[in-house]
Image (cartoon, rainbow, N blue to C red):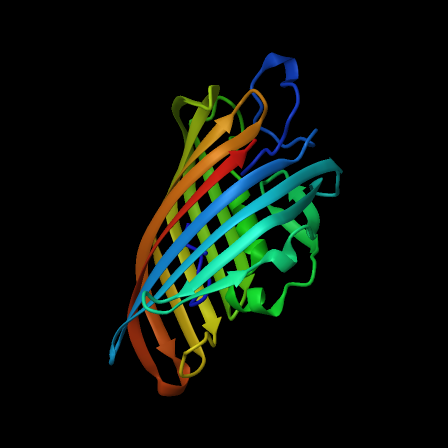
Length: 271
């Protein structure tokens, strides 16, 4: 799913024994932390009266996820960035944002049985990082859609992510998930889950270089392939692509301009 960063976007995280020897498709506390690597890329093009403007954003991060005992809506969860690097700008002017100041500082909250991380306590976000992206918006990338039962052929998959950076951006995804066969991942037997649907991205704010406050809305198709370990109950990896288009308006100029986007994301569980 595309995430708007500068211009602009479930899971059982568990270790342990499968109940009665069967596969795990539910949330459980973790015996040890999980470490995920995320690589996220987005490319936006806006057709302005002066020609095409581009925003090329990318994020690389390593996160540690810990799920503990019961909470009101599911399980207590802690997500900590070990590394966070962000690049933004166009093809001629790229800027790097180093998130080292955020490393080791935990976001705490609840992991619901519906597959959402609700942050209840967050560290202070350095101003430079906050201007580029919302670190908590990437937590949805750590989650995979779980079936209501092992026998389910398909099931609804919905995600809504709000991010606060130089713009306020809301990404809403609505699709359908299904099992898509078995595979092997790092010598582990795994199951493939495919989710396909529509993403709608809307935003409002004043990004760097804009002539004033802007609003935009885009929609398009997204598809994600998840690799799930049904023995341990752990997401091993996911890979997604998305594309679409819409309009951007500069409010002070009452000018509407067509825009398009392409996005991709890779997530991998690290040893």
